[in-house]
Amino acid sequence: MRGKVRLNTRQRQKASYTAALAALLVMGGIAVAGPSGLLAWSENLRLLDQREAQLAALQKERSALQNKVALLHPDHADPDMVGELLRSQLNVVHPDEVVIKLDD
Image 1 (cartoon, rainbow, N blue to C red):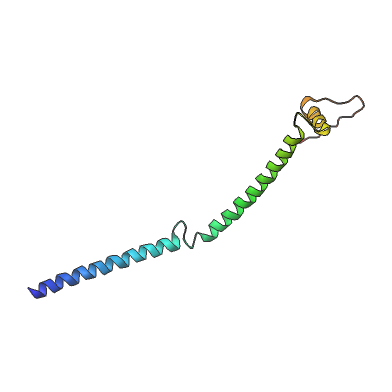
Image 2: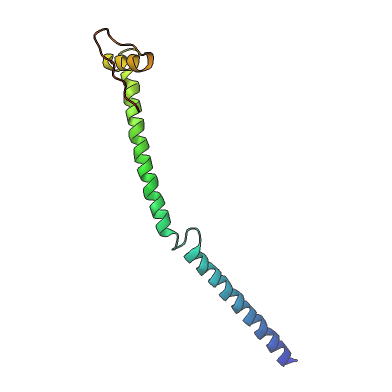
């Protein structure tokens, strides 16, 4: 009877060690090859650099648009900006000006 109990206990212990080893191997595999693992680290850094460059370009564009809006404020509009918009959107020119069309 004692031999059977020891055998049963050893089998359980061996099974628990095997399960623990399997769990550690799975966690190690995820740490290396998972979506945020070591293999994906360089790809994540490249994407981060790309997004930061895109963000800088968008912030520059936003700053230019904010400047343009400030120049078109109804209370104190910039005459040069108003003239540029009139010429480009309404096709208005002075009689002494020459229009040269450029292909875009």
